[in-house]
View (cartoon, rainbow, N blue to C red):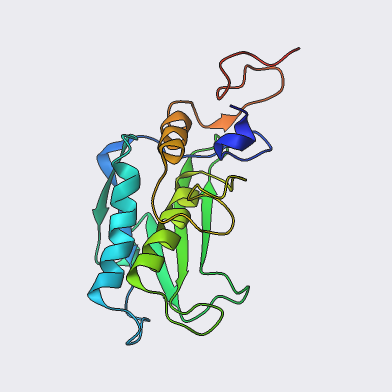
Length: 188
């Protein structure tokens, strides 16, 4: 499988979190800005999206915290995102490629004006948590990391991809090095 097909950046720069088993990734889900369009089911949909990726077996554990001051990852809600999308993720990494912090923005309302259901929000959150963990978009529309989210759950390929990503060191896989995502080294 080629690096870009796997859902890692096509430039070969692999960014991912260091192992977080003994020191869990601290996640803050901000619901203060959410109006009546969010229920406890919406919050649960976001939290279970994180839990679902962790259940794939990657070396990440989570703890949900009550303050963004104590978080590695912050999930923010807005009524709408300017681009007409339902989610956006940003993160910072150090020079070695290790992710250090991230923010996920989730819209509460579709571009067409309809509120996102908990199920729709769960799918968007799955997609954005995939980005937060280091994955990029893929061409396959049946996968959660497709640019236009049609899937509602992780596919076996999504699960295999995240396990593969967390099986290689962070940093750059250059043209002179074997591609960590291929079973056969690229031609020299």
